[in-house]
Image 1 (cartoon, helix red, strand yellow):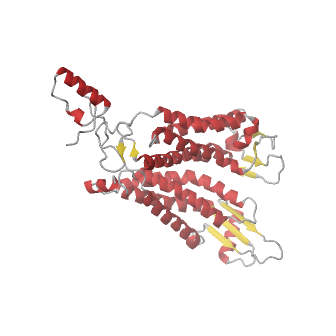
Image 2: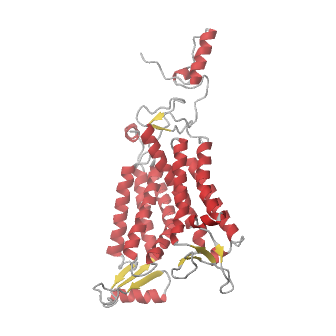
Image 3: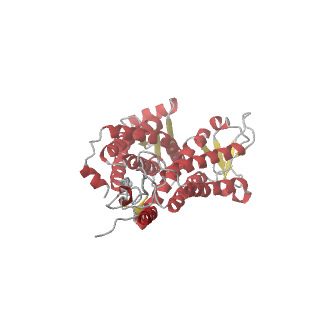
Length: 415
């Protein structure tokens, strides 16, 4: 007959019992827990894993601080400057290319992955706290770089110019995006890095961290009772099959809405300026007389067979259409997935946003118009602020329509 698994504390307790001649071993020893210890409450949050949290903060903060204070490393971060006064207002400048906007999220993505390896498992709480600290650090650095004139973020756009000082390429980012969309991208990148790192650790080690006591002692496949506290507190990871299916359906729905119903809904037009239809003519008039539109016209070089293209997008309606799709996606996933419905739904929303960025670059931009792709990415940074809350609300609503969880559903979810 196999002996039950005993922790070091249990072994010590048994040795003490043998020495005293007490044969009434407490039941907690059989469960693998310390003698007479109360069962952990799985509803209480576990303590943060300090090494993982410190690793996250260190890996995220190091490049941000070095790029801000070491002049030769300015190119490795988004460093702000106060430019010459124009229209009686100072300008927010950043020498470099728009690619610098992606460096901060990249650093936090790496920080989340490294911290998950150090924590040897899921570090959702550590990633949330570390991400907030990193975002606060970045906002503080930007505040120092503009001499504390925080009001500029709401009034002036950020102007990104080549490092050589020329004006060959000019990129404008709304100042409010520096304190809204960009920090949100930083924080979400950190969460994604932590999820990916934890998934890799669990695949390699075959173990996950107990959500009741925080011990790395729960095998991913049955039996799933924690070897220390004895509580079946392990939860399955993100349901990637559901995520993949949901994201595919959502992007197909976005594509169908934009291409199939875009003109009918007054949201998207792609016209030939040489032969403008009635719908395009009305859209051009609306573009010239009302707000909420972005548009550009590509004129191919003379002698080429390419036709000119006029793209008009009502960005407010576009954001609303995708928000409706994201709301439905998160709601369905939250209603169908067991135990990890919120994580699965929100990861699907984030991946749908990334897919929408790629679709938008293809549909709404043209390589013949300089900066059109950047303008589309800029629009989708704003979309992140709209679609993530829409997905969260959809997931919360979907939870209320979920069927009662049965033992069979739990067994299937736990592997």
